[in-house]
Length: 391
Image (cartoon, rainbow, N blue to C red; front, side, top):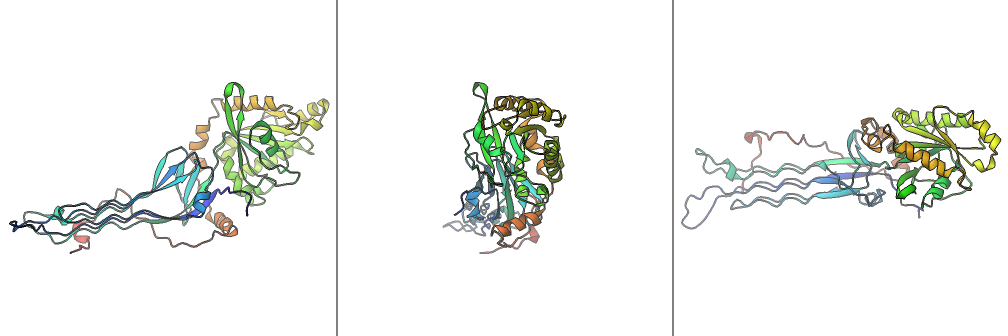
């Protein structure tokens, strides 16, 4: 049994409801010899709707329910009775979920706010009854429209965590230790690489009851942007972060070189991440004396603020919080810009890498894909092109 239930992407098959057919019926009543047509319209098919829900933090609930079917519309009947509309199917997803077409890799939508609703698949429209086709020269039409067919689509849902500060560093750099020291989060901590196998979130309290969210992802190694280690799978979680906190241990041979390696991996994965504001934290500084700290500080990158901290003794922790808070609230660094920046969300998706990950996790189920229906605003076909249905 796995230790965690964190699931950050799933592949699901969605199908909207088909529209009900219109009724072909002639009014029959005593003493009404020429009742005329009174066939009602068919009901519309149900929609497949995505809804943001802040109470979810993972896609686990969709991992075991990967076939989503909306209800079909009811058929029309006599006396101009309308068919029942199909039941909509609402899929609750955590905020920060991005949806891609599993067949083409095209971006579909992004759910970032609580109670935000996006229609993923629209149900088919119901057919018109023969009551609509009566004219002065055609007083007894014996045909009605069928309903529009259902729409089918296989999608990949990918979760990108929404946090203010993202921790970036090599394995055993002290990321999980810092998160446990400044928040109530209790990630797994051990003295071996890749202790963290999933992202962790923590709420960091600040002065006067203020707070911000910090995200810890598994350690990045050189070549993570090419699929080495765990970086490729989890690098996307820091795309949504407003600020990046780079963490390098103080006992590293070359702090500047290690920082540049991390920066290069982010740039290779997504060049737009270089536009984010960055702060460098030199961890495990309790083993350094003041003279060594001063000497190391002279060789650190000049274009990024730095601070020496120790999560064990609390050295520099409050200074780090102050630095993060000022950076987060600067006019040039807003979380909204990181969320809605098109370059971070709408970039093309390489589905071959996702397919490989799905195969490794045993989620390589093949599902038949049928092209999506035409656009919503497409006009109905001419009446003569329909296959009329008679009772």
